Image 1: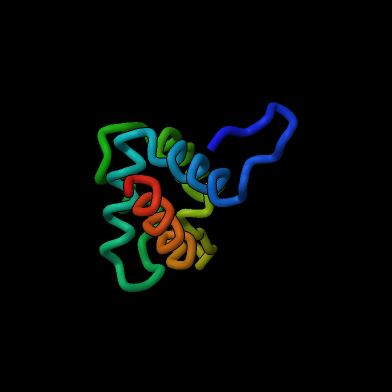
Image 2 (image 1 turned 45 degrees about the vertical axis):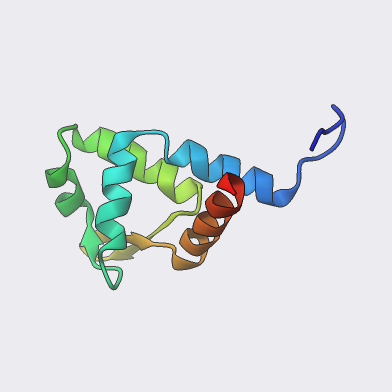
Length: 102
């Protein structure tokens, strides 16, 4: 499907591009795999940073990218910040990628 330069892209294509960008680093894939294996929002930052061979500040940047893309949710449970998969957007991402490769 071709688009004219001044046409807006369909929302599904914008979301697919956003999810694709968020998945563009191996550390983010590791984070998502770990969070997807959790049944509830209980994974805190320290657990994630211990699983990756990168600095805590870099883990924080990757979490920010995933959160901005809508693939994860972060919530404060003092004294920790907990993360989990955004199940609604995770399901949308799976559908968009599936439709894309068909």
